[in-house]
Each structure stands twice: as C-alpha cells, then as structure tokens.
Length: 253
Image 1 (cartoon, rainbow, N blue to C red):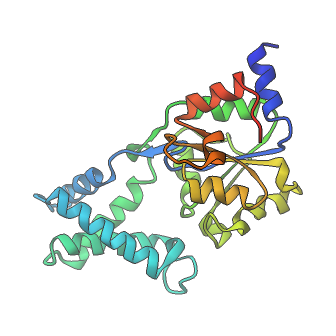
Image 2: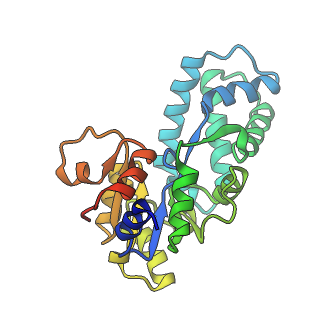
C-alpha cells in the first residue's frame, strides 16, 4: 500500500460515515440565468434584460424562501414543483408584467424539467475522484443537501448513480442545514455515533458549523478568508487541495 493510501486511511479511520453537500461542493450550476433566457426564448419570450432578470430572480427567490421555506415543504397547498413554478412566474412577471399566465406556466415547466438534466450542471473539479476514494476506503457515503426531492435525478444525470448509500434532502428531512435534526437522521438510521461521522461542504454556517455543532467532524471547501482558527484548520481552497491533505498530512480533528 502506498504512503498516500496509508495516510488517507488513517485520516478517515475514526469515521464510519462520510457525507457531502452537493451544490458548489460536488456539482455547480452552469449560469442558471442564461438557461432562463434560453428557455424563455424557446417559448417565444425574447429580448430580456439580463441584469433585470437577475435582479428579479434574486428578489423572488428571497421572497419564496421567506414565505415558503424549504421549497414549500411545510406548505399544505404548495408542493416543490409548484414552488419552482411560482418562483419562475414571479421572476418573469417582474421583468415583464404583460406576460400571460399560460406562457409563464410553459416556461416554468420547461425550466423545472431542464434543471434536472446534465444541461444545467457541471462537476466541480476533483469531485468524482474524491467520492470514489472515500467509497473505496469502505465508508458509508451519503449526501446531506438543502435541496428538493429531485436531487437523486440530478445526481443520476451527472453520473453519480450508485455512488452514494443514501441521499438525504432537506425536503425529505423537513428541516434544512444547519439544523442538527438533519444531521441526526442518518445517525439514527445507521446507528452511528456523531463522532464517527464527517461532513464535507462549501458553506461555513450550513455545512462546517452545522456538522460540528451536531457533534460531527467537518471539512470546508472554499478559499480561506476567515480568521477563525478552527475554520482555517479544516478549510481547503478546492477538492484537489482537500484530497491532497488527506493523502499527505495528518489531520487533527
């Protein structure tokens, strides 16, 4: 066994479970507003101002998240597909109030479909290799993500089918990261203690702090900008740097 493999195994020895965030950790959206413009054009709506579209999207997304959090999970008359349809309709109505309801519905349905395909996503560099290395080390590997129930479809479209032992979305859990209850669900299902679990993600509050406040260990993937000593100790600029650290350094958890 190579020294890299030995150190990788030693660093993960204490863990029975390793979970990943998805968006901006393993997968990245390919310019979603460009897709909004493209789909609208295919439906006959052209000459949309990109800046106005972006402003309206951010505004509507903030409104929807506040009014119907977690993709409408607790809203009795709003399922997750309707949540996105309402967001799309609000966004385009904000840009052009004259657009008819049937046109907005058509655009929304097309966008809900296309964003579950590989057309709108790309792999974060190093994601496939890191996930495979963790799997090969014999760990239970899962996903914990603030996402709607379509996440397994997205993962399959991006070639991750069969790579995870479970996919837990905030919609299924009924709570979103950093709530400790979403981190507790896989522990209870698998009968694993918190100190035997590791979560890897790109957001300090939701992923790193959320995991550590739930008794887990955490690794953060983002440029090291914070002054927090613990964050810096477990923070890596990208997945390649993280994998290199697991292979070449003894990590103090």
